[in-house]
Length: 269
Image (cartoon, rainbow, N blue to C red; front, side, top):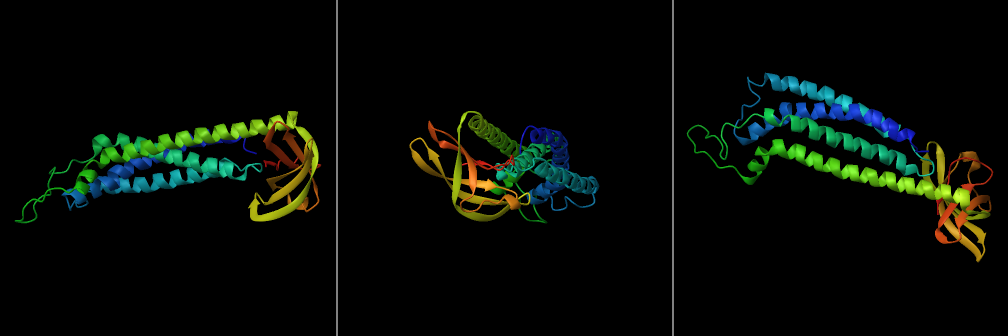
């Protein structure tokens, strides 16, 4: 179950992952993008005899990306996976990893801004042999402002991901609160599985099912559709009993759990 432990692990891994991506963004900007930018604008020999430091930065960039990617995979799996909400854990790890990538690249490429090599000519390409200088195209101007565009775009992506993560945490917290409220104050009855579908999805080695459950209420029987993840030997079958907790005042608040076990496999219907 995804709780406070997963966010704590993400924080612990997030700092070095962000720093590793910052190193990759800095070295990539100066070791790769800087040379390509100059070659695109007016220096076809940008990786010629004077490209020694750039080659070293490319090697540093390769190491930084390898370290950052490894830490990113660690973040992906450190979030765990909730058997109650199978997609939340991996989704949280993926979004947190994407945030460290964009934030690190924004920081690293931002620090690199003063070190980008200025073109030999601005607004036009250097003449080739006895030819005339050709003015820059719109694309050339975009490439020229690349030192500012790379950190700016990365920063915008990071801000969007921060908002997405905050909303995901809030939604998960609300869902957990609703589930706990139903466990504490909801009406508990025994329901029966009337229809079951195997989703062909396994969560941490446990099968996931879509079940149709019929249960009694004060106003008559109701049927709810829920997703349930259970151990293989506790897989639900047609007619099997399940625990249903519901709120008589809220038709959408229904919690379905396997009967006779504390295994955390419920989901709202």
